[in-house]
Image 1 (cartoon, rainbow, N blue to C red):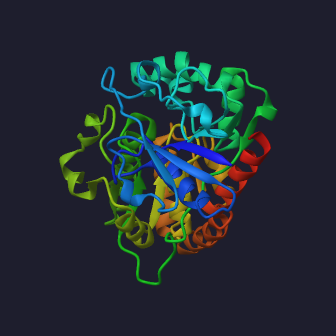
Image 2 (image 1 turned 180 degrees about the horizontal axis):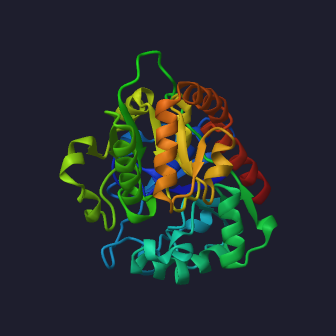
Image 3 (image 1 turned 30 degrees about the vertical axis):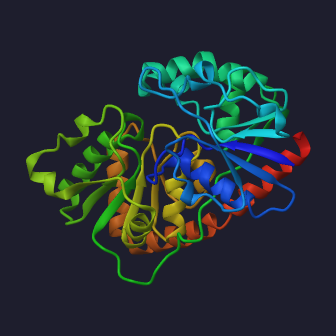
Length: 357
């Protein structure tokens, strides 16, 4: 079976979210017999990270309004009908008009429709006018969570049987170590309003004022949309809040392993991969009770309302002062993370190929 997977979203070695999904998926699929894989890449895709047993095909990207979202309209890729399946690992496709072959699209989230105030104008335009068309014409859709599946049905009026839920996974390199913990709590995400870093910082300061602990807050992630207000921290707490910027996977694992706790108070997630990564490293987790996060974490973390900073502060205080609670959450998280692997993600995806192609 000839399958083409567009990987144009992977434009550097500094991957996040959807890029990790696409990379891990094609790596795991390349281990399966019966699949002839072609990665559709851009001139910026680092080819050295791709499996050696797959083909590559370059698609030159043209940017409009500073983004590549509309590349499919102004510069679609030809010859796609020669493949049995085109599997787009995100809603960014290399075509506008559907090719004469089976098309599968993975949908991670619908942030621009659900929370438009957390998105740029071009994101809102793209999701409302372009993504809706592609989703409607696709032969099948993969949702990374049941939460995302419900959103697709609600916003794009798609039948339930057209959508299969295939959760993301966590790599085997994310695992606990026996070395002592260090005195910090960690949060990992792109610095943007949806991730609720502003509320987290306020809650952390409340917790510090209340408990007088020496614990620091480490924030790992590249700067995103409207991030500048995050850096306005009272002078007396500036040394307690550290912005690390983008962190490589190897260094990120070390941060998870040594953190006292991981905190993820996001307003909305389609999946929430950092929660799984933290759990797999044995780090106790505090997470938002919104969207997909309860589905991913199950009963293995403390949940908070992301709109209530006092509730976030209380949860941080509990997990930092109650060793038995922290140890219990760590053990529960380790078991929960074992349910999610990239190998399982690839196997379920291949089953969809066999059914649709």
